[in-house]
Image (cartoon, rainbow, N blue to C red; front, side, top):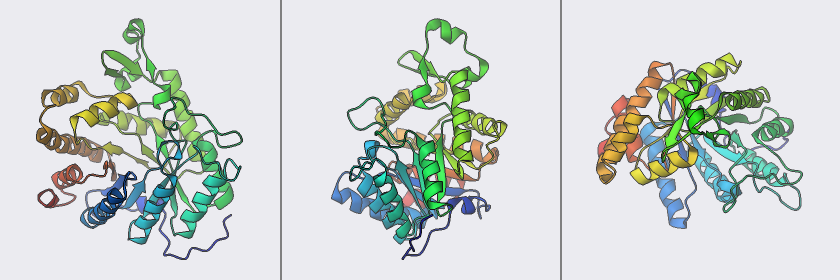
Length: 348
């Protein structure tokens, strides 16, 4: 158990906030990533302040770069958010956290600094491979997965932190397989519902691998995770099925939908291919039809985002978690369209 005393005002735990019904249609939460330049950081500070004021977001996520590449800046930005009125949700990974010869000291020090700064919420992640590497490898003597990190937080800090973990409605990208023609023809109904096709190649998290994913998610929750934030998706039915599967597996905590805003055609294509994300045929055709019209893409991003959100809200979802890409316009468009906010589109 941590014995330090925080000197700043202490954030509430997000799980306690999630357990309260929203005053309006739904809660909103926003996720940002650390910019590459000093000016970018200043711009992000201003944007985060505006978006907190405008959306009254329930909490604010700050990501942790691949391979721990933004560790120091991620922590600084999360602490800045905490000090400026956000409920800060710091992403923390197991990757490249060796310090003073100790494979886990970097993790402990980051948790301690967050705690001392009043942060009380952590997203426990394995993390992506370091830049230039294709596969993730554990540091000798360090953590091997997000489950290890959840267990460590609970062992060393008890209930001082609220902890969330990632969930993958379509399966973790590492468990998504490229299919042969014969395998495509023999997919099960559940595989058909979550498969994707990119550049003519069909991919899916096979049923056996999906079961392993759900078993592992159950382990993370049983080890002390309070709620789940999902990987991005563009098919609302996939999310609804995932929530049903969570309940079947005895995972009864809140499941927060992670929503990637469509801001630009190249970024959409790159990210969905990289993550092997399911893109409904109608969405793919619409995006391809206006790929050279940046303004039309943004407008459609608002329309499609609002459509997905309405489906989620109709299914009982009470919070919408937006991967903002450090941008405002499409988020405001969606929240205005839903009636969560009003008049923000004209301001952006």
